[in-house]
Image 1: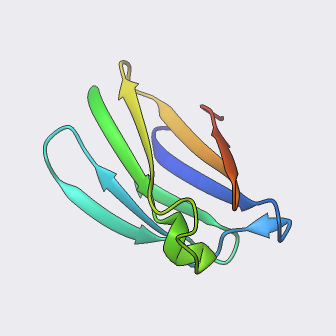
Image 2: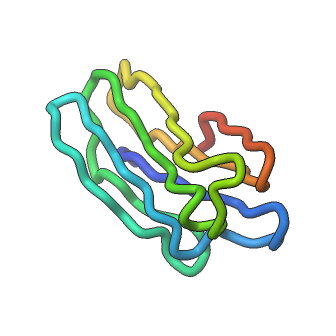
Length: 101
């Protein structure tokens, strides 16, 4: 399996962050925007290339509040072909991210 996927878990709701907008900045300069599905998941790329990537999670719009988080940036490097899964665990005043499987 190759590609780039994400999943956002809203810890307050105890469910995926359905409808959240996620922006992908690829190493070739292409910017794409995706809306997370009803489970808070999205496939962002079917194939990755080596380079620096940036994901922008539009948390403020999803939470309907910009009291603390607006956009959460996640920068990461792809060094080898393969599958990259970048989840985000979100609450109104905290988040965590990691490389998943």
